[in-house]
Image (cartoon, rainbow, N blue to C red; front, side, top):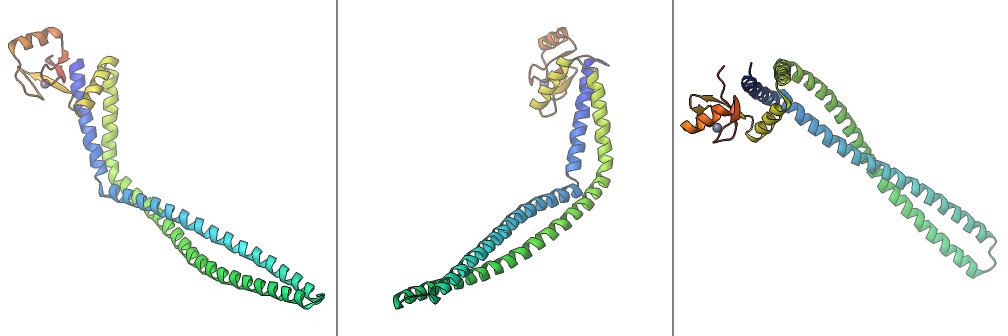
Length: 236
Ligand SMILES: [Zn+2]
């Protein structure tokens, strides 16, 4: 097989590959799998946020415990101090201090209640999020299996085309391969055309007599003077 025929075969194989790949992507199982994976990623992000908030609340509660401990210590000291107070103004100061400490204890108790109810709610969300993720991961495994089953036929076609492609490439010099790759990108997969009489097979522009003579002199592998695709002149 000449280089021109190999290039035509390569193009045909690549077009078939594109067809099979889009067939694969259009499978309903693949679409539903992609949707589930998207949901999973979103659920994981949300769980991370929720867990962060739960840890914050636990830290706040720990800080409140520490504040309360210090407060109770201060109360104990003030009470000891009161027992040995020497005069009325000292007693008044201590009473004032104790009333401030009592207010602080109230504030701590109030905040603790608030944080605890938030913690309860967020822990519930965390547990729900974790079990949702576990279920979704299981569903993804099942969906992936279904997609694999349905896709295996198409995958075999893709593998066959890929092998054909590699075999063709091994018969083409590097510069021709490069030229094809560049043209294939530029012309969206339709890089190579064949001269049929005086008409190239893709752009369908009738070539003049003098263009035809130039092309035939240029060799089997040339360039279309109109659309600049790779033009195969050789007859196989
Ligand atoms: Zn052309």
